[in-house]
Picture (cartoon, rainbow, N blue to C red):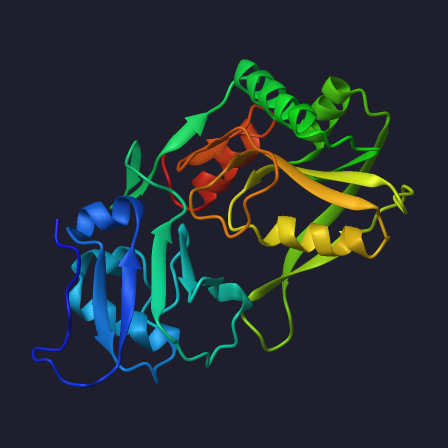
Length: 272
């Protein structure tokens, strides 16, 4: 596999932006990166140029340079959804599939699922609980992020013997005139956390946006200390929690959301 490819035929002085390809996208492209001339370009313009040279990128990038459903883009280490539309790239754009592999395919689109059992969840909860105890951190309150984090929060509370459990709901919205989603606190905390040790729990840290916003929201309530825990993380997450069981690069289907995931996939045009 080639490690890089440059759009510049010579060795001129034009500054270049590196576009890195990860996961199954890298395998299908047969290379892990490409260099595009012009750091004065926006990240979308960089990706449009990259598509001209890497055929496999057509499955991931729209005509306007934005990522298609099922793909994430990070610009200089920041999720594209947190950037202004005209952000100029400094060094690097990373493109990676949220859904890897090819166990299911419709019109050339693929999604690889991993169906977790309740036994898998119990093992992950036990692993995370052991790591929390081993670290010496003693949470006074566990806060589950709705909806995916509520079941792990309840199970961890039981494993750790924590009686105080709260919930908070964080959503992504599109503000007027702005296409990128922003996280906001839809349901605030109603449990007292001031001067207490708080453990914020979610099912998985994917991009890390939701977990990061949850930490910032809990901090407003003046806790003594805030730690985070998820059962799983994705390899590309921008926020690795303090405690987690393992990393998975597939589309995770939890036992409490099988029907929901199936409906979402069908609505997106996948056969399951």
